[in-house]
Length: 323
Image (tube, rainbow, N blue to C red):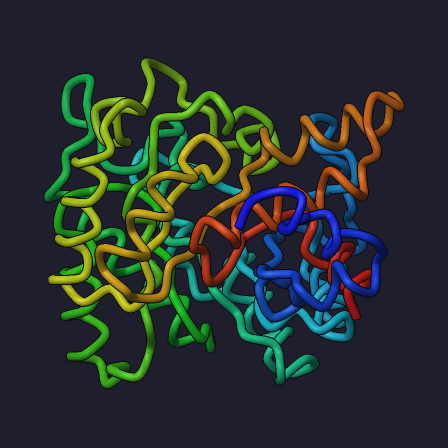
């Protein structure tokens, strides 16, 4: 029946009724909090392009991790800024590296918190690309061995999950094989499966000190117009052994989050990336919008699209409001 019998506004009349019929619910369990680990002790270096985010030494990361866990967030993901960079990114698999020490510290002091590690070379190479350079491009197959070394180093330090973000062909299979051969067949892989060459990564490159020194990453990250190719990338990663697939960034690719969930029916992560975070924070700081409401609206939209977990720099703050 049509109006006046049907009046949808009846179920929007007050907050109690709206809560009763709400279809999508955010929870602290939905979130993964990223952290940037840098050398030194008692170091907290704010990232100018990401208000509220900082590079932190291991001692500060451990304290922040404790706060994140207390807020109810189940997991963090670590990115490393090494003291030394070279063409191969050898600090990535240094067992005494920043990420490895942070893993051990967190697992000792916050044992209930899941630690995921980003597996990529861009933070560790002096050229800022995600692998070994051959000519003016990244050598895909030569990079796989380095990613395997990095993943194994993280897992030996105690990581609960590894997340390859490099977008090299075959890296999920290479890491899965190596983990299994080393007795780590219980460690899941969260693959950055549909990672696009996006303008929204700009603030992250300051945070991770990972800007490429020449060219760009469009020969290995995905072309933004390509949705069907994203589904093929996801299918390949699942075939190679990925346990969780990711779409990155989130907001310009909500349609692909939806497609990934419905076409594959596997756990889907979405990365609410640095540029998305910084837009909201800047607008909130300048009084252009209600930052808290906008943040909740964005995160709800990502979950409504189909994301089972959301990597977001808002995680700890929002979780405190949701509890």
